[in-house]
Image 1 (tube, rainbow, N blue to C red):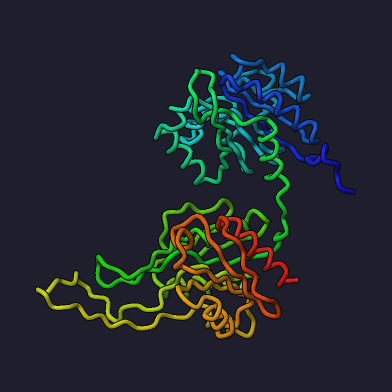
Image 2 (cartoon, rainbow, N blue to C red; image 1 turned 60 degrees about the horizontal axis):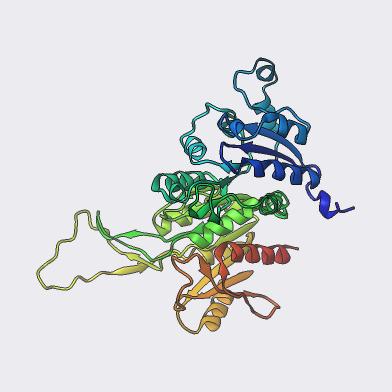
Length: 405
């Protein structure tokens, strides 16, 4: 029997961390909404938060002791922060002040919230709330970037009138918005549990000499989005990536490489353990026949002639195996999109082809958005509307599940 909407979080445990800001009062309402949704809630508070609202309020609302003192005799004996860390399905810091975000990013553990965060191994969300200039400060943004790189989800602040009188970004979202974000994270489907997914991403780089190389404009965003989505849905994910500036998605095993031959070796080494191979990497088709040991010098006005040889065709090699995982390929084309993608789909004996037009402005390489067409056997091509690469990743994996059934 499915839980009613008012009890959608039954069986879930949330660790609610409250920092010192005028919006701390909203945390009490968030706690009330979480309890109404059926969740158990444990609360931790910074010393600053206790200047705005008392631990007794949260203890009364949650029915649980509040972790508010590091050196509290009885509380220390019970080790409330470790108990909460072991029990919670999610930790959210709301409101998250600039000070606490900095301490979290630096790994400090000198107040109840930071100690709880440092002891917690599950999903973490932060909901920043502060003055608009503090929100825009480069140091604050760098700290958020660090936290995001470690898998922390950031609920962006609202824009409006702030307690200091300024108008701008920095307001803590309303408790209903925070509840929705928490619910979406906790109720995320785990339909890839037990599946092993191997993903390739990013560009490849083929050296010409010690300082130059041939590469392409792939950012790796699509492959990293697929790896992230698969991991969030319960898969065991290995990501083989060419050089990018992207942080590894949380819970994903990252294997880095440069050249096509290196990517090929990593794929073949990990292939026997994979149920699905998703080849999003923009694998270079050609590499220099000779890699010069010294930097190639410019010889006046004489042109430089390069002899290029074909690189290994990883997808073709995998598809020829007697036993292989489900294969997903990508076709980035600048003309005759469907025809070229369909030919590649047949030639490489794929299970699913994802085709996108790289000549279209605002999508594809380097962009956060894309617009693709899904091609599979015995079905008409499905053209998806423009959407974020993370959303497209979800649609692709949905189709993978259909093909796996």
